[in-house]
Length: 234
Length: 217
Image 1 (tube, rainbow over the protein chains, first blue to last red):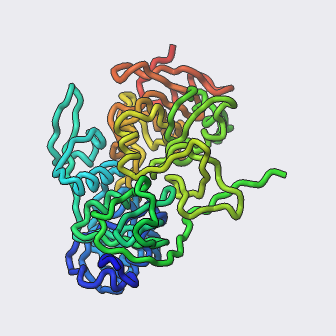
Image 2 (image 1 turned 180 degrees about the horizontal axis):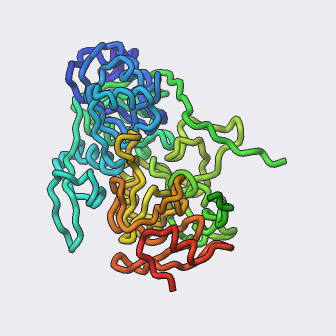
């Protein structure tokens, strides 16, 4: 049996958490979030987390769990509009917040995982995002410098994984998960289905196992934020 | 002074924006009125919708019972695939956007200025939501169309000399579609020109409700 496999989410975080740590958590809205690892992080009691995640969950679910218990000191996100407790803590000055344009956030994480300390982008030029950042012209156009991001711990969610840590994602549940897996000093993945080596076609691996140190199979609730349907025509 | 509501409604604004689509286009639609543009793609025209959370070839909403929590759009609504659909991670998604591979972005706005600046993500001291992908879209997509009501709830112009709210992007809007008319400019250094008016709307009405310096003839 591979040394990467853990029996449950709590065991999978054993020895990895410490106060003041930086945690990347995958997902877009509630889609593709590592539900069980977030709950395990809450139960670990770790404090003063800097959380890097596109969104902040909703009240009482996803990263909203860690906001309720005041375990997050700072959020780095692109959009947090679905969370009232977040807004309350932020407006009360209890929570630090760094907004990143979504593409800049994704690229900062990709760069961090790829060993690139900084890069230039035209996103945010002339806005508050550009304030205090180095500007540089390339071919007559102005760009701002953004830095790569890494984490002490990345928690990600995949559809299928094998015991070597190879991962495959389903549909739009991929989102930030692959880059975060690359950018973690340690990455723990939770998967819907865990299989033995050979169970996944190597042609269709999204994240190679080198980026995943621990893996756990766990059942997810997969809450839907905006259930939207169309009428069946007669 | 109560005024009868003239001009286009939300659906008519979306239909007008849809006339800017071209065969073979890859398009990103923002939340609100821009989302309605999908209902007005002409029959037989091949338009591929991008959703910045990681999908090309967005299909319609699912039938009841067919929802998949792993398959949503950027508005977090459940959607479906088409035969041509593909999925990718967020870095690849924004490589499409920032890298200029998307032909057209249609998005909502709180304010647009005569120099093409747009503000649509933040009201200081009021809401804490974030810009999501809007800053990347206006910076990277080849052509950007802003669709919004010509005036705010207090009847004040939203097409301004200069934006008063924090910017989403600088000099990036190519066309403005409001409930009253259509304004377009040929390039980043050119002025916006009134191109079309909604039925029963007069130039004088548009002038009185527009602060931006626009070419009217």
